[in-house]
Image (tube, rainbow, N blue to C red):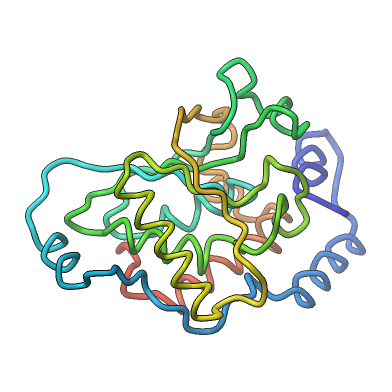
Length: 241
């Protein structure tokens, strides 16, 4: 299966290019697979006590909060969350393994325990964790794909939520139950819900990859459709450019 590393390294080698046949092959895969497997309208997270959650959301909150999600190649996941109003910073990186193995070439072996992840720093007065969850599950990736996303295979591409506190854990588990009960996906949700031990930023050339490389073949055929879906499904969440 063709995956992002083939395109990434072909871009870096002098004189290397992507054959038209490979591009057409990718387009046919994307068209056949569709995106995510979710129904057209998946629900927002609903708490056990909606009144209590609404009151909490309306309460003034100081400072910022963070969330760490893993959903396949971090290029596209990062690009999705960068476009949300209230999101202040998004970084690509690694979570789930040790600091000494938090390097792209090692993580790519699938033996380090790391997953390609993104850390989202956001203003809770402008966007809630529940909204981030909704976008993560319904736009940023397919939570039914076990240890792969699209063309990328391995545990480093697993679906995961690395929660930073008990409330994030509760909300994530609750939303997964809600999605499963509603039959919002064609298959079972396989997202790992684990405590965040550490987040290690990825190499500089991975940061803002889509913004820096908008015509990269992998971006065009695997990640641009995510942005289109975000714009169509959640126009009210987009930051003003």
